[in-house]
Length: 225
Image 1 (cartoon, one colour):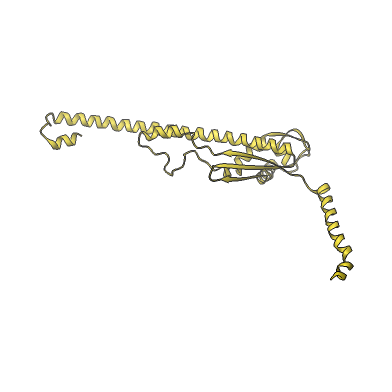
Image 2: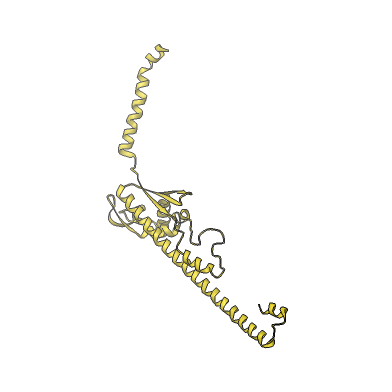
């Protein structure tokens, strides 16, 4: 065994050395740097709680499933075309492409002249953007951890900040819509209940006019109640 090792000592040394040199060359000249910018967000669940509480006074249950009415799935939004469309219009500064460039330009044609139409550029950029966004959910706390990958550190940070801004904007619009829908529903129920109350008052009035002496009639008293 010692004799075999002695005869192959050059190979045993040469192979790891070649692998190390190849790895250094790849990292130095061919590998693309990637930077990860992390962020955490909490799921909002109380935007229409006051409206729900008010509705409960009328016997209206707005939380039939046991969940808040304004809960929405961050995972679906983060990978949605709606969010991507808004993100691709935002502008960023990068070392590679310069200042004030749209994310669409950065992710597709850069500083070159685009060779394909806008629709195809949007498809390519959307796919690139969604693949650079990763996330995980902590079920116990309701917190989402988001990780945005980009070729430049500052660009990754800026991209994450804009992503959070767009999520917050969507959340405000979503909750505004839900609150408006809740108010509309409550108003409709109030009008309906008011109509029922007026009809009941008219019915009671007619009953009393037809039955002026009900003191000695338990059945009429029960009907009046």
